[in-house]
Image (cartoon, rainbow, N blue to C red):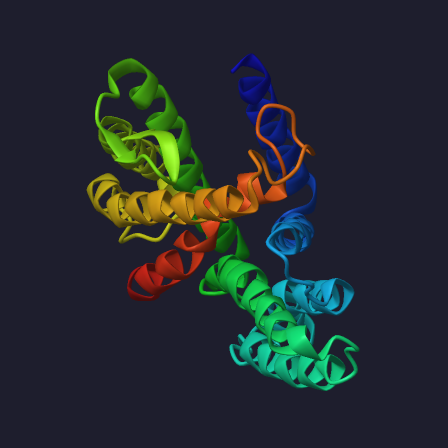
Length: 280
């Protein structure tokens, strides 16, 4: 527990320090790196399940899919978001991997290889790139950056709240086969803490958030995001159970790998993007 708390505080320190000096660029770099590492660990899980995805081709597409929308918008499209870039890259990845899979010597696993590769690209970089697009929703880059931090904080504090609430009050197992330690009491506590954190940040950083995101609205918006976070976390738990491992990696003491860090954001990112389409 102590190592997890220390790692969490250190990570937030590094992130906030990087954002202070480099602004939105740091957010894109950090997200791009974490996305690539998450995809790498996703494919490690897939390999333990018996699949052989195209790792290096996919990592190249992952970097382009995550960072591309930001830099194309900033430098080539004069601030106008090029929303079709990442979906187009995903389509191109299907073509490239389709051609590549024809060269596989093991004809019995070609379809499995293609499916595992494309699911990784769809589930990790395509979903996480919505955080970059969330930043681009706002004319003021500072507002977009703070909104993204708000979404990350709401998601991650749901994890922390669920853990602490589960330890203190947990009695009823939520998904005993997938994740035996998760309880309904912990989930409720996580959602409530997310709502409180969301409202608190909205009150303290009102000048850097959309006018429509009042503390009351922020608390309400935090609830579906927190619920999505719980589902997202359970999906990663199911993958790890299928691969018969505890953590996706050992990169971060007390937390695990990059996938253990980003798992709660994968499903939350597109949900947050859709919600803020109406609040921007």
